[in-house]
Image 1: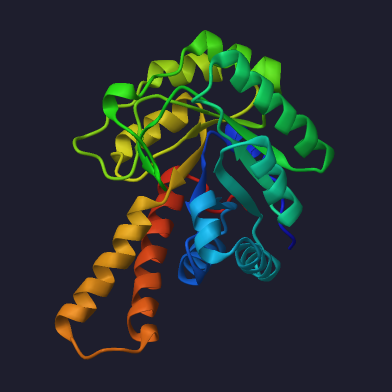
Image 2: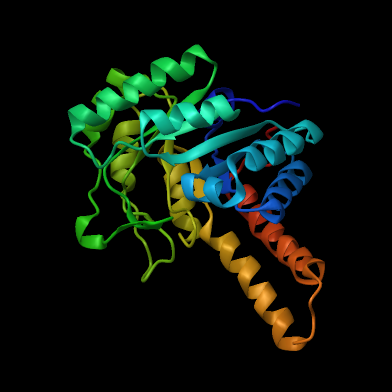
Length: 284
């Protein structure tokens, strides 16, 4: 089927009290691992592409891979810009063929964030594209952007509710204690913030930095109102560790298929386990 926006799949997730996974694309192996796992688990899925990943793969290559993957799948597939930095970037990705975009204005003052996000929503909705916004500052590293723990800022529930009403976003990422990249300790999420916001708005909330969060914390977050969870680091680690193990056993291996193939399978198992944890299996 063709690429779809996130709107319907996330509405169903909120109503059904499960979450849809966004798994980031970084190359062909990531793309195939994500789609194969989603297809086998009969789960809707979101292919996430950051600006850095699009630059690495080539924007047109990324869209082409996603379109082929979606057309060959029987499950709903959305192609989503992860952490779009400006209105212009969001429009560039929409014109390229993305079915969903995130505009991250969280580093701006609240009023400016609302202004930029609302502008993206108005333009994207006119083209049938869904939009994710962000409030609060999520720590960790995403591409070349790093936010240390001291500068991470939790979302204010009242502001988050107001932000949704003013912008009309289809999904809202709020900072609740998660972080991008590898965790230094065991993360503890602010489920009270999630619940306070979720019960007052009609859309699902988004949890960034889903890699490495304990399963029980994930389940509590979904029960509180999280409907979309982003995962990237765990797949990167699974691929890299598998390749390292292969090279350690055979230093003479040179055929990329001999190590990228097993790496893809390792990522696929991570994705499969996340889909089941999120509860989106058999929801396509």
